[in-house]
Image (cartoon, rainbow, N blue to C red; front, side):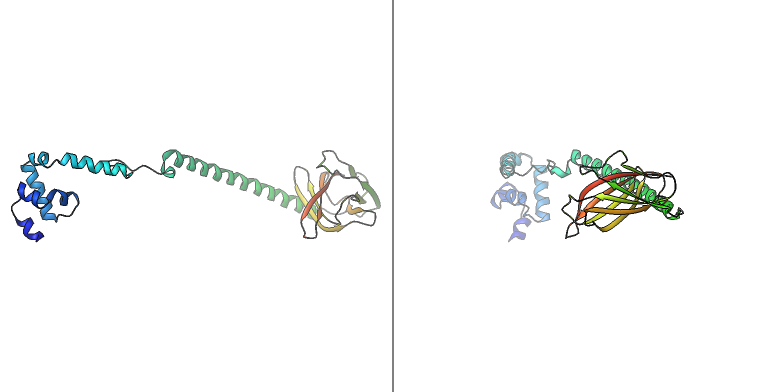
Length: 240
């Protein structure tokens, strides 16, 4: 039936009787039928006024607008993540993060090299035999690292310094002591140290073991779960 209709001569009566306009707009005409209709409209442009094509197009556009759809010739609105300012901001943020990572990596590498160098110096430094033992009582700071040295070890004959750090007030019994050379790097970490019956933590050091300078001791208490809780700080000096 459709083939016979489209094979018939294209004229105004044929177009109205077979709803050619509606089928064309709806995309229901075969290619040959659509081409014949377009050819007829080019030769008879007055037909467009007779069938009120403009009104039909305007009605279709109003339907698109009511349904929240953009007109075919309008560009689709970009989502928020597709907008240029957002893309530029994301690119700048990624660049800043990349630079920050490079800076942190550089600082970490420099810190690791400093620690390795200091450790190597400590390991390679010859130890002199201690000629005496010196007991030194240390009352550490409970509020944070201190800038001034609390005691100076060495400066004459080699000594074995017995540091008695008062931790009698602490609620914990096991401790970890970290030794850092100020402004240089980490020297060592002493794990699972216990107090004596008087509440003192003993650290014995050969005065020739470490190079001259100031060292910060960070004392952390260890809970039964092995969690480290900051307890006290002390700064000592070595002199040769």
